[in-house]
Length: 313
Image 1 (tube, helix red, strand yellow):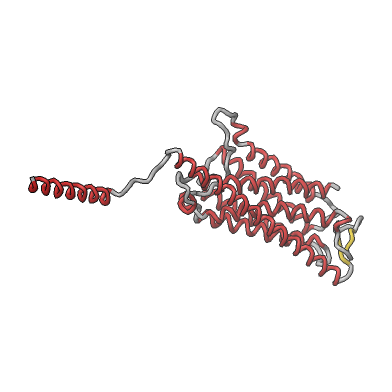
Image 2 (cartoon, rainbow, N blue to C red; image 1 turned 45 degrees about the vertical axis):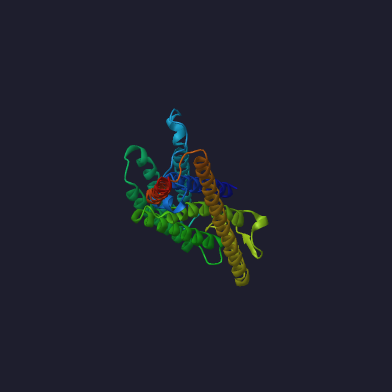
């Protein structure tokens, strides 16, 4: 039960922060340009590691930076959980070392969060350090996957988690080099949300009997503390295929959510720009050359008419 609660907590923390960063980055991208053209707004936008809440200036400092404080508390709680898991004598040494590696990577993230307040660093430096932290987290998940046997579902779950962390690290590294690449910031926020979904999927597939794949079962009271194992090779392949299918569905879901968020915010800003134009916020100026030539032609015609009238008189 404790393991399932841990995975549910990781889902709430990662998924909510990933969606929050996705929405905040998209809003900041469109707010960076006063026009309604998306291409101009995207070119003017520079990625940031963290976006405060868009609240009035008189609000308290804590409310403005509430997401960062919540993320820091979540990181500290997760670090404590990983340290406790590494002290369990029932686990093999390789797995205990993997938990310590995860705790070290999460501690690096916590230090980065604190540095935003105490030691403001440039965004490219923060993204580079975040990429290093994601790389450490990916390595720890890979080591955790290698510590289990191939017949155990935990190895598949940790291997997939390692791939998602590697994708997050790659996106953060790209942002460190090119902070104006908006698609990389969307990929970073989406990968964080995807990591949260996969944490929930791992907890359900490993610790909820109704969702454990057919042919696999939990092993209780063993020294290696394996949560779920498959007896037959066919059962293992079927279980791994189901996990791959679940990961694909989660990836498609995150992609659809990202597309909906981007399209919704783009529509709101586009409609707002049209309303401002309709109310007189901006207008198109006629070319001076065409209007000047037109006035000259009219003056020429009037002069010819006047001279003809004078001749007839």
